[in-house]
Length: 116
Image 1 (tube, rainbow, N blue to C red):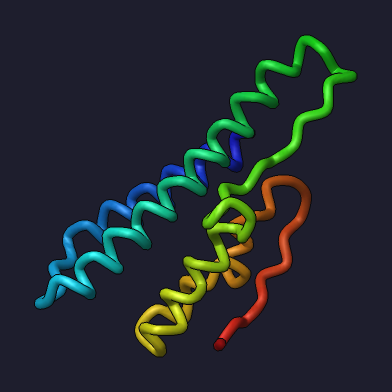
Image 2: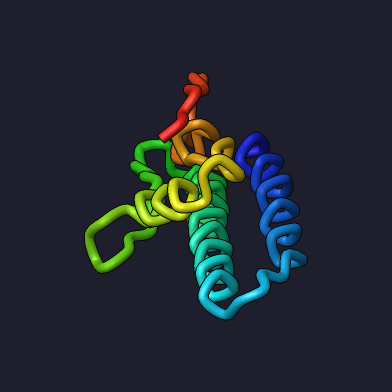
């Protein structure tokens, strides 16, 4: 849980830095705002998961699952986030969710080099 919270602190600072960027046109500005909101949704889901683990500590038999937010009801929001990264190639290539292992909330991580 401490790892998730520490990572979330870093990720929230990253999203705050996105907010400082002012694209010159309304369409890119809206896209950046949406991408930042998606990041916030995932970070909030990670925080809920950590809180649920804390709450479940008193009942060890309780199963806790990480629930990734969805876009359009079914598609993981991270798919949409990665589409934004692809559209902004090569400027944001290090922000692919697989490269950051964003969805991995337990156990060891394997960081992948993702380029598309």
